[in-house]
Image (tube, rainbow, N blue to C red; front, side, top):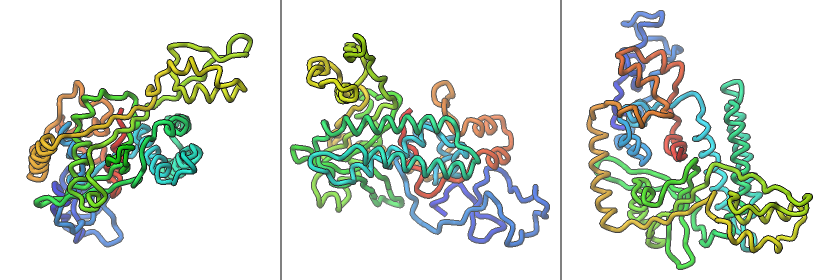
Length: 392
């Protein structure tokens, strides 16, 4: 099946393909290799053939391909479609934060703002749901996820206080699905919204939770933004609304500020010029302690508003989009035509990769089947791109 390239037809289960990277595993079970297993026997490597004739290509898959072919071979839905059984705190936080932000921006305004309780409650409810599911499957909730649940709650509370002062746009769609039919494959993706700015221009909206916020020049060159703008301009539904000029990245820094200290016998808040806090949150602490916010306006005017949240508007030129389309077609052509698979240099690329253990075994010519069985599982349909958004 084209949609499951790299997999061979299963010789035991009709209508299935085999995701094993090694020779057939059936000889290791108490059945003769030449005998077909009875219907009640299951093989973890046998997956139903999808029946699709057109492969779907996602930008996250392309970016993985560009960074490391071995990682792409293990993770891609076009190949072995594996993910780690161990939850990743960064991807978990990014996924729950995306859910909460979609709920928040999908809620109509109340007057001129959206109450931040909508955002915080959406995050907390989705975090609780997913953590309960993890406890049911793992028997316990990993401690680092509990810490990130607390971090995410603080981030959403802070963002909900900050955003109303800077949301100078109307949200037309809180989520946008994109699809462009190409020659023999479909490009598919999903971005986090379609907005109209105060000058009437249309922008795509993309949320990013991040431990560090990249510089503007790096953001302007990333394939993801160009792919989404290129796809939006080819989408008749979106073009019926208007011309998309670019994409706005909405970065949320993974950090909750420390509260300003009380000074002078607890009668004032400290006014430290290097205090890393937004004006909105500083004034919130003034109100919490019963101080008059007016007394601190001169000080907060000196504070930076974009330390924890930053927005970049990227407006690719038509020439850049045309060059991107040529590069996209070349990359996908290579991906879909039995590419050579080899690892990247490990000095900079491998930190934090899910597949280091498999890659090391493969480089040493050792068997992978037992490690795959113990440590990996198939990606769920639709989860591949949504969980690949967090920047670390």
